[in-house]
Length: 107
Image (cartoon, rainbow, N blue to C red; front, side, top):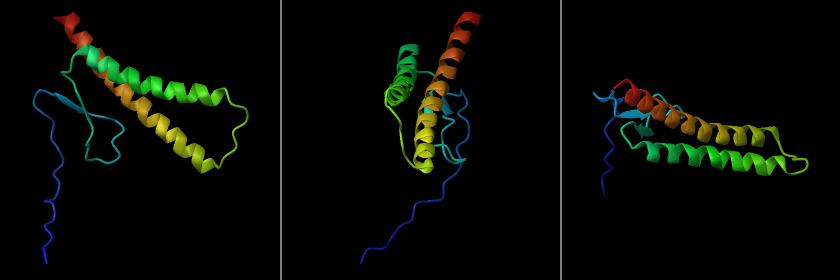
């Protein structure tokens, strides 16, 4: 019978010296696992933000074109959370884009 080896305890990540990776706001615990590469090219960052924001926009537009939507309140709450996470991720990436653009204009 094989023995089980547990993973070592997690250590909360410390900030990278050059702030290369920024934790997304939508991380669900105080130990972030999802990050944005703040040194990624602007076109890659804007593409990532655009994808997330447009996905939520498309879903919400499709819902708005329907007639009445009948469902339990907890389903609407879960749906709102799903939309909020994607929108928050997109906004976080746009924050990085803004910082890069400000840094370029101050040089």
